[in-house]
Image (cartoon, rainbow, N blue to C red; front, side, top):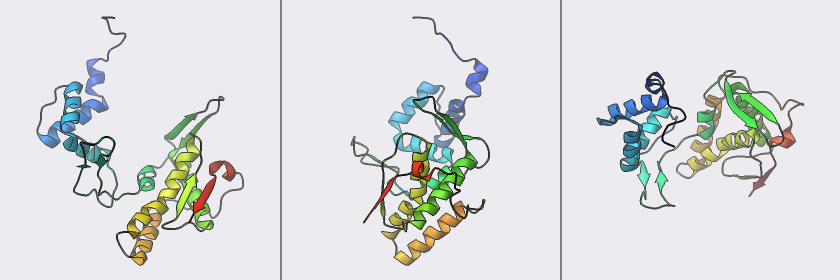
Length: 214
């Protein structure tokens, strides 16, 4: 087929996120990238520069990004991106608030659900409290067997509070790590009151099936 079924207008191209990001990369590195193909070529020939721009453009919140962007880049598998970075998945996931759509889920049996940023925030908060009630803490291993649905993301975000602090324990003393963990959790939940306990209507059994390993 020689005729495209559809192509964007120039106004759509000019207002596209890809165009905005391409211009940012041009500014970041003093290069000329006239179109998206040029941006793609830059992304596969200047990997560290490209992904540095992606990190900064995404506004990733991190304790540190580290000096290295890519380690063992000639290995696949085996390449490591930002290997020295220290960040909280939950902090980045939960930084948005409001009734905007955070997740849209369509199941295989006509189940459809939409979760707002506030919904996700509240459910992660509840899950963190459930884990704390079970005594989960820094250094614990949590194993989950979960389907492809919003609760899986919620469970992963809740667990990342503890997982991130365990990585801190390995590079500092335990007392400082525990304090850092508590401050991180307090900072993330500072803008909303945490529910005192899981509401009775919350399907906790569906939220997570966990095994806490020694």
